[in-house]
Length: 355
Image 1 (cartoon, one colour):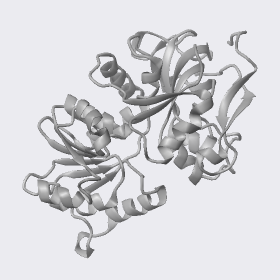
Image 2 (tube, rainbow, N blue to C red):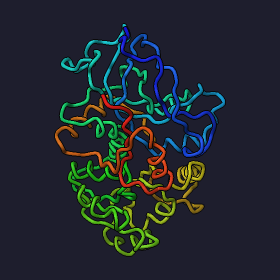
Image 3 (cartoon, rainbow, N blue to C red):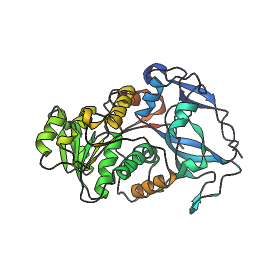
Image 4 (cartoon, rainbow, N blue to C red):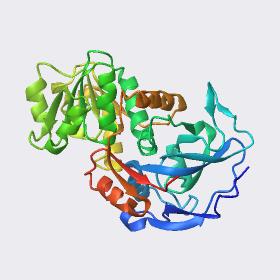
């Protein structure tokens, strides 16, 4: 059922053509989603997070076959205002967690929703499946909760793919990126030794999050030459690349153990080049010059159980979301400028509205 206080229209950032956010996004008034059906929820959004995948989708994938207008971004926090008739009154496996109107939640859209259907979080109201939300812990603010899902789940699954364990020595390339900051923290929860690359200006933040050593990639340029010299005799067990630097993998035998995995999630060199590099790294034979190290290119499908575990760590302050700035809804393009210019120091959060 729906609430009579739900307006007929809402504000949302939308786009109808392909291009950079500054060129194609507009803050518009569009119809509010109808009352939810089935196992769906209608959520009034408090905060939404900007991620590098948002601009990449806008400039790369044609909008021809998608619902228009398209709404960007995947993760949000807010309050349930209406529930479909098939929504369980409590979350499966969490008898104390209500999924009824008035419940504060953290939610997400799977990436294919943005790519195929044009559905996103940067709007005052969203319709979302009930299995794509978890209750927001009372001790966690809306803005921090909104910024956890993408970076937290990506970092969590990167650690699982690489089988990170206590005592391992790990390099995090891009330690000040959203995923990088979460990798550093989760690795320290596992009692790993962490070396992180970042600029001098971000070194204090990354060290505060738990990094044992910092490599200033601007001072030690090219960074792979410095790593080969400094860590040849004490190579890494794992390398996580949160920026996406092909040369770091190409030279990795000089500083990554022979059985050590290289896990990449970054695409700072562009989506097409990153995909081409990934295909080369996977399939080019070693005998013809391929790199003799295990390469993983990681993408994340959001998972409810993982989100609940991340929220538990967040509530217990074992980890935190490193937020650089919270922007009012009207200034969302400033946050996109930070992301597109690769100048972000942690998460860019949009305050959609006051609840």
